[in-house]
Image (cartoon, rainbow, N blue to C red):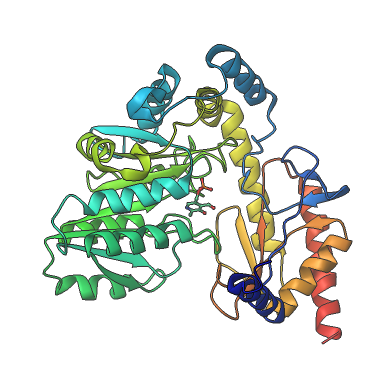
Length: 409
Ligand SMILES: Cc1ncc(COP(=O)(O)O)c(C=O)c1O
């Protein structure tokens, strides 16, 4: 037997270290479809934690579309898009996605990806390859999603791009370094709706900055697509902006209820990513049945039903914003379905999540490194499938739990 096995000892120490800092994450298993009522580890809980903002993940029309798609196109694509995996249903989906953003991006074309993580990595690493090594400069917002952070790190390692992190929603800290930046090619990249905070990027001002300093603006609207804008087209519709500098990224596993993501930009940028976006080129195309279901989801987003669901969601958001008050915990200024409550310490956030679980709610504690140190939180998310009574019952439970945690020290 081989007695020396360093990796085994190291992994044990590392995992114990996570336990000591209350940072070990745990997988929980659902036995029901993603919906407000969830069977989690064989217990019924009311979920306020998914990104299924419109309640589409278990929608009968989309289940039917997925089934039809599988019957028509089979279950696998068999290869990457550039080999033989690009089917007519991918093509139709991309055209429909481009139509969603065409009022906001001139000459819009869309490219479909299997995940938002992959789309961010592809957009950032692919676009810096437009110029020579060391010629690109990337400005990335401090609270960006991990997939942007990883895309920026990879772009920096591969293309020697300079990276500047600017402060959360602080445009001064973006424009000041841009003024003196001599790099020929600049990219600004940020979440449209910040995933752990729920607040929104000031897109109009960002476009002005991008124009002033001749930069591209990548907006990751993972949490705005389907939710923001009258027709659910996302943050660009919400702000009613149009610019050829925008590289828009939307995800399709959140409000759209299925899976995947897309990049939409002026056609030459998309053509470039098809040529040079390595994660796109070297990854098997998403099953066409998923693209088929997504097409049906886009139709629903724009339909009267989509409009009604967004109206109900906005009513829930208003109730939370106006009626929920905490004594010690902190609410965020968010007009989106992401309504985090900041508790600070990991111990408090874990204790609150446990008490919520005992009261029949599923709202996990979000801790570093997903959020900054000492800002552990309950990331409460609202869905069009929640009723007003569901929300008010949660609010009463949270008030009671805040009291009990304060009294219990
Ligand atoms: C802002 C943001 N971008 C990208 C992603 C990644 O998307 P996906 O889950 O499709 O990989 C997420 C996922 O949570 C996100 O919140």
